[in-house]
Length: 190
Image (cartoon, rainbow, N blue to C red; front, side, top):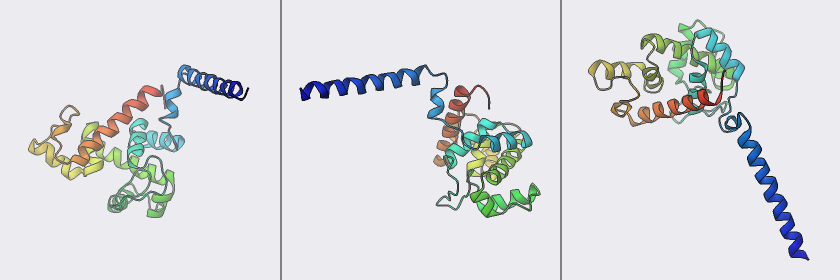
């Protein structure tokens, strides 16, 4: 008797699980559960303001901080977009944003996204729209990437990403591109 009751419970749980999987699978946007986008309004606003692809911003945030506010890296990078303090300070001056502070960048999503997006726009202009070089420069710094390109160490393409001399930057570019492809495949629009 107890055995029959136990088996019935198992069957009910199995049916519930199968039903959940079927609903999840046939839901049009089930992959969004695994690739959520937080701070979407802030990203959209800064994307439009600085003319930067919102999926690129999202992918960089995913790789840099996984949308965790207040994060500080071992090297000292801060905020959702993990800017080094010197770079953030320089960007705030260049973007003429005197009201933004380091504390804002670390703890306020809108400040971090604004400074990071402004910096992506700056890099996009410097590297003449070469998105892969922009991603590499966001990680390694524009001086290093410019040097690699000028010396012919790397040609700035995804196909030759293996030629990037820094393993961290090579891996970073691959991860950002991976998330970018996932987000653009999952979401029809931003």
